[in-house]
Amino acid sequence: MVEPASIVCKRIDKPVIFAKLLFMAGDLEAESSLERAFSWITGPTTPPRLEAAMRHAVFGGGGRVRPRLALAVASACGRGNVDVASAAAASIEFLHCASLVHDDLPCFDDADLRRGRPTVHVEHGEALAVLVGDALIAGAFEVIGRGCESHPGLLGPLLATVARSVGAVRGIVAGQAWESEPTPNLRLYHRAKTGALFEAAVCVGAIAGGGDPGAWLPVGSRLGEAYQVADDILDLVGSASALGKPVGQDARNGRPSAVQELGYERAFGRLQTLCDSMFTCVPAVEGREEFVGWAMNLCRKLFPPAEQCGVQRSNEAFLTA
Ligand code: IPE
Ligand code: IPE
Ligand code: MG
Ligand code: MG
Image (cartoon, rainbow, N blue to C red; front, side):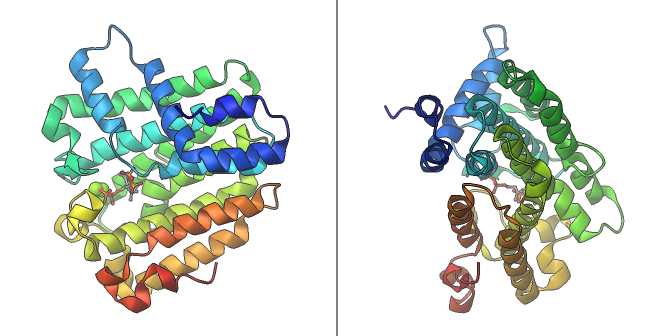
């Protein structure tokens, strides 16, 4: 078995080597941090069906973009604490998984497929799906508490950052609630329902990595908004088999979307602009080059492949970053 990056990095005190190692092992670290954090928020007295449904929500699929982003920022900052970074990354993914379980419920998007499998409420029932979301939200905060046991000074900033990203001012709750308003503003809606968690991912990464969260915030906002614009485009041109979730949802549910508001061509333009401007915001930290390489790869993947939308819109067209 490959050693988790947290174990390898603890033996290494050179910040730049630390950064490079974590970039190389980011995916592995994201997955192992989730396993560890999951063991903290479940136990022998957890009702077995609830635990099975929680497992369904967290494991067995998912791009892990947000925890990898948090770890990539922590690595780029280079002076941080791996245990805190790893707990913060897991906490962000728990919140994301909770948001997906609730988002798929009949009272929201009423979706039956997620990550290529039946959604949690389809497989485990609506009552448990609501409770899975609740348990993962509560668990996300518990994980931050555990991760900061040896670093109490980081607890306050991490809790405030994560709570803001799910709250009613500009977090996921606000984002989902814009769907109940008669005339939502698209950018506010996107920023809250998706951007907020990307902002939190870069900020917790910066806090754990000893960097400046305020300097990283614009990177998260732009990436998060780009991610949701790309999701809106894929909802139109993608396929359920490739995405592992239903397509055509935005039109079916009457959701505001970048494609509906801007049209297909301008939605692509907006995606490109957001990605380009994200790169200009990356702070001048030790691991900037590695982070830019990592983010470039992520941005390329946001552009649907040529066969879905025409050669001129393929990911090869993404050259300017
Ligand atoms: C889906 O996010 C919801 C959006 C904000 C578009 P992801 O595309 O990151 O979902 P998973 O985690 O990979 O399933
Ligand atoms: C994604 O909303 C954001 C949240 C789940 C909070 P969507 O409804 O657009 O995402 P998908 O397409 O179901 O993944
Ligand atoms: Mg939705
Ligand atoms: Mg949805």
